[in-house]
Length: 484
Image: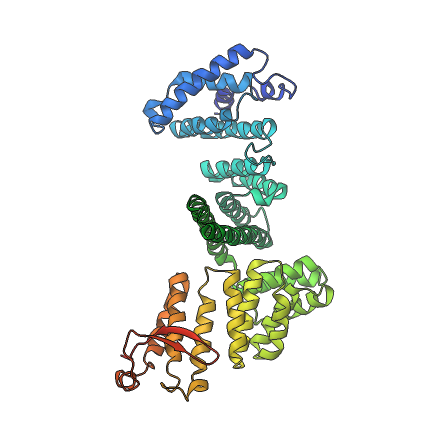
């Protein structure tokens, strides 16, 4: 079997030394440029026909494979298509010859290494694409043979070290799955899962932050174009905004998948056990303390003594918005809303977008619990600005509106009009964010019962469906509805 494997490699690609022998000062089409250009033309023509046939196995031409092989061997710098088309050709060969797939996977690895060597720069951006190529190499190894998880893990680990910003969602997913395989097979300790989870979560959070900032800039540019009446520009911005929103959704999907994969390893008991031992070894390790507090907070394990101890140590060693947030969480859990609010205020200047959102959200809850309704709404609105896709800020605003009914008891409807605007916010929350739909529906059912009666509306010279402005600190326009 081993002999056959090497035979396949030699037949398809030739010895790796043939590729290594090429150097960067050689002509684009190699020493025999005429032959390379001819073979390039032949394989590309057959490839286009195959592509037109939607890559049907029946449409594969062996001359295409032979010509492609020669282009790769004699002119590895001829075209980047040699590598992108080569992936498709090797995919066909792997699926056609499952018994020999490891030999073809090895060939695919050669292909990716050569692409990184001869085409390290992305022609579109002008920046390095090596990390992206290596990430794809790791993904393909893991996709074609999950038994080669260790190889995929090491390749993807190196890709992250090169440039995590180049990692696509599929690469992140494969890396984390390979990491879990490493731990489950005793080749890494459990702490590795925690470390990689946090590392990848930070990559995705950073991606979402950049995309959210881009969204804001695109919306501003679109508004300017609308004001100037430039309809073509508006249409262009709409397309960019749609593409940007899809990218946000993809990254959020990756983040949810990471959380789901991590869940079996993320019980509070397990996390506390692992982290307590690590913290005992190095109680002044700032990076470890950050990891402990971040993950325990994300997994809602903040009632533990470990979380408090780690938070205090971190705040003493390195006062920061992140450390302040952790102290605020503990105080909030203890019902010390006033003290917690001060720490959450400090935490809103954090670099991590998810942490900023949580800080504003928790700050809003602190103000809600202390009946500081105006401050509550302001904090919730800021949270909504940080994450426009979250419905929870609108849940909080709705609760603040409902809780302030007594402040408008002298109005025509005795303060019951606040329930209209409260329900409006709950409805907006579930429209924006399906994850809060259940809670929002419960609140809508509960507070709709407190709407003014049909008689009360009639005797105040109003009718259902009319527009109405709720006064006081709320000052919002809504629609009149009767209790059912």
